[in-house]
Image 1: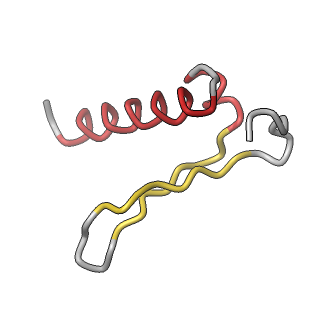
Image 2: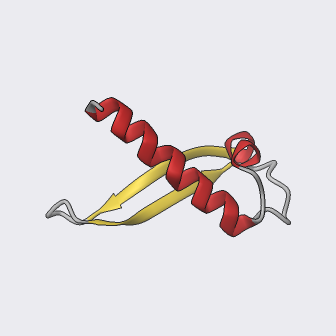
Length: 62
């Protein structure tokens, strides 16, 4: 598995986890999500992700 495939796999896993927390499907998340941003320290340590949603996202999703 090359680095692009690994990054894609990690993104899919993240989207599945976020969708599960919101009680929606990964496909619905993809519909409402604009972007996801990896949060890292200056030393490169992963500390989380920020998901940016469209303004039209239903309140019950947020």
